[in-house]
Length: 282
Image 1 (cartoon, rainbow, N blue to C red):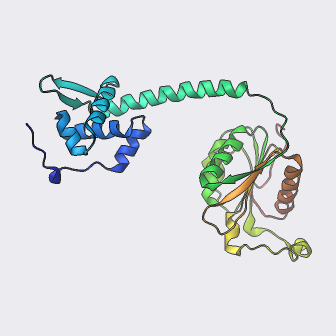
Image 2 (tube, rainbow, N blue to C red; image 1 turned 45 degrees about the vertical axis):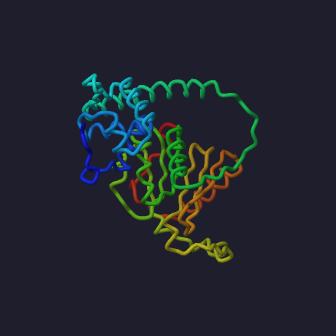
Image 3 (spheres, helix red, strand yellow; image 1 turned 120 degrees about the vertical axis):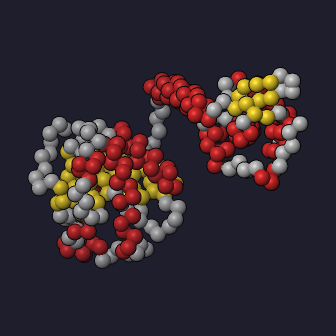
């Protein structure tokens, strides 16, 4: 019988368990597999004593791990188990994950193509949190066909990668003059202007009546996306930790958004290129 000296054994990290769960294992499967990697080979008692886990859960996890090819029995009496080497196991889990991803995507796209048409009003949706904001930008830019108008803070410039190499006119307002953007993101038809150089002289009569609770330093957090003149998203530059914004396909809201964008666009200095060639494919 093997006696465990738990005080000298490396504990399992929560990051390891969470990563294995993401790859498709249950929590107990992740812990049992990891324990076997630590022991190299072990009896059931060693595993459940080390994990302080219920014996039935360990037995069940060993069975499912063997079914998945991640654990082998290396001795019959007493039963001794050994983990498949991590490089092989992770490769196997990744292949299963990729296969499931491809199958799910195919099935979901078929459902999307068969989507039930509904007569919905032109609604304005709220987008909560950085994750959902990022997902909305990705979806909008991926679906773009002809034109994209953007006001992007530095932290969101990487989303331009979804436009790389595409036949799309891009009008981009940035907060600075980063001339590496066109080449870095492969934007073929880009016009870029700098928000810091805006001339608001002729708008002063309007702006003086506006009182927005936004410190000037936060204006660089403003985010606006208009795609194909029919889909719009706006995230105000409010000084809050959990950001939120709105998105809509409403023709009225889109018209107002484009009017506002154009008003400021015309008053900003051109950064790139020196001469724009519009209308090449629209």
